[in-house]
Length: 140
Image (tube, rainbow, N blue to C red; front, side):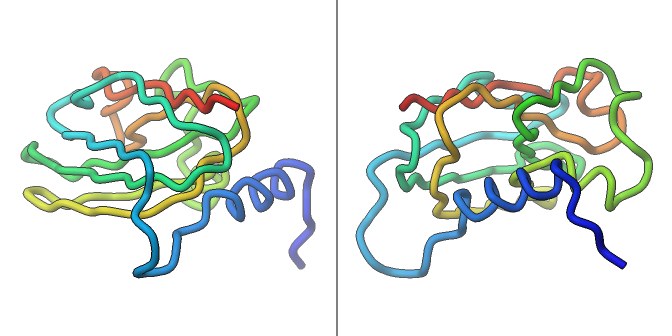
């Protein structure tokens, strides 16, 4: 039976705020474009306004699968060992994650989470420890 822990409730609330926007409609006022390579993001810091729609484009220019994952507030990944082996436990650590295949690009319209500083990582094994991390600053 599923039991809603405080962490799951926070994740659910933030997930609702970081909703994929419907197709069509007004264009977003902000955009973030990130190139993913071995083993870095093209930028290490991104800034958006709280509660605002923004367009996120991820381009995998590397030769391995990569992702861009926003860590829950209050959590901090400091070493690879902080990431659980269990995929469900790992997924519960993020308010948003998008995987991008080699040579592919993905664009998503998102609503930014509440104001704060969020750690962003690639959580694929050994990618974080190799340097794939950054910071999403949400001003508000």
